[in-house]
Image (cartoon, rainbow, N blue to C red; front, top):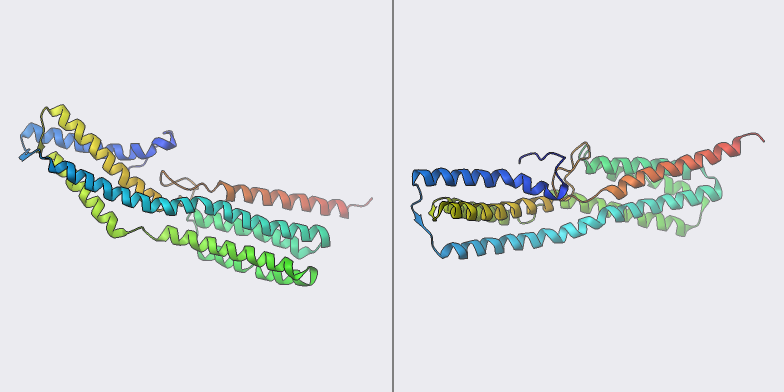
Length: 275
């Protein structure tokens, strides 16, 4: 797919990605018209074929939108669960001055960095899940320091984080109805090719109609593919598609954890300082 310059507004990037296909179709139509290679007469059947294709694309779009709406919630919910664990660790440290609680905050910051690296496709899915499992040793250290209900809450949030990571991985690696994509692309291609060889007069009307139909069909297909993987990011953190779910909540969590740790470290230094 054609790369889109970053200076183009985000909402219009998809349109600029589709524009080369529309321009190519218009040039081919113009060339065929000049050569007189338009042997097919215009028929009302084209209206039915176009309507059927739009219906199929609408069905696919509705299917991927359901997963996309769920995907929009996952980064926020994931952030909430991780920050809840951080809250409990901070409470335990401020109450008991337990070193494992501060160590857990350091570890949580590494967990968040690992999750972001995985979402940016700079590392595989195993490290984040392994780091989530690594919280167990901190929970074990907390047992003699606090009540059992405290550990139960931490384990519940740990389970929620693991479940959300697995769900994100499933959404990223599962395509919605691959056979449906194939028939939609085939139908759209056949309609555009057919319009290239249909004799429509005057010439400007033919090119205008072809450009509009090509733009709509290609745009919807590309949009469906973008929505099907809402976590399509490059290793440098830039969006690879035009409809990606924002990871800002997780990025801000990493910053807040650093601030928490810095504040706790400062308090420890003040306590150690001589009067």
